[in-house]
Amino acid sequence: MSTIAIVYFSGGGHTHLMAEAIATGVHTAGHTADLLRITGEQITAGRWQDDGFMARLSAADAIMFGSPTYMSGVAAQFKAFIDGASSAWFVQQWKDKIAAGFTHSSSPSGDKQGTLLYLSINAAQHGMVWVGAADMPSQYQGKTDGINRLGSFLGIMGQSPMTMDGSPATLESGDRLTSELFGQRIAVAAERWTSQKVAVAA
Ligand SMILES: Cc1cc2nc3c(=O)[nH]c(=O)nc-3n(C[C@H](O)[C@H](O)[C@H](O)COP(=O)(O)O)c2cc1C
Image 1: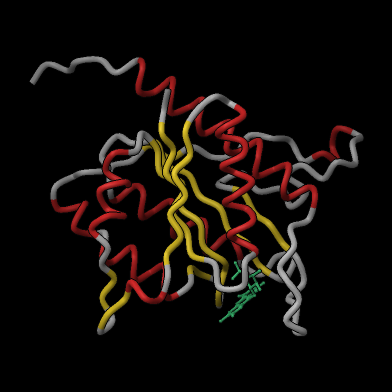
Image 2: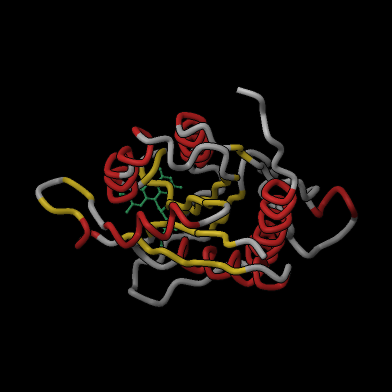
């Protein structure tokens, strides 16, 4: 059984709902999800640190990174985490782990691609194995379930209009399904990857 860490920031709760749906997919595939929500309290004098988080990320077979799209990129709190987690880079702790990404924004485009590009480049810096999304947008299959309705393949995207009245965050039903299927996909990919490790001659 593989453990999939889902590490994310969510200011208003939308990315959190995606993370929960991804965890549901991981469980459906018969694997373990470890939800790790970044908070501003983990940042002191501009530096993110949480040794417990880092230990759980180190123990995971795959890491899924999630951030809302803020000003076309990751949220500042998420970037603080990434910078703090450079401690893992120095010792190549995440090398060869499966990696994947997800984001949520308020506009249909919202320049979410910038966020996924950043997440994938960061994974590459760590020597991780990036796995994208593979579900055909449902519109091409004559379906109306909304799976991959935003047509994203580098990672998955969710979108819902920004709520200005303080009402709780919601997740569009197609984005929920997309998230669940992505959780399943990454869990299966991690299981395949970790069960087929081969020794490489030095
Ligand atoms: C500082 C800030 C910047 C934002 N920038 C963008 C943006 O570039 N594109 C967009 O579509 N939405 C943008 N939004 C809206 C958020 O992406 C959107 O509300 C998202 O659902 C928030 O996710 P969360 O509830 O997980 O925090 C921005 C919101 C904030 C607070």
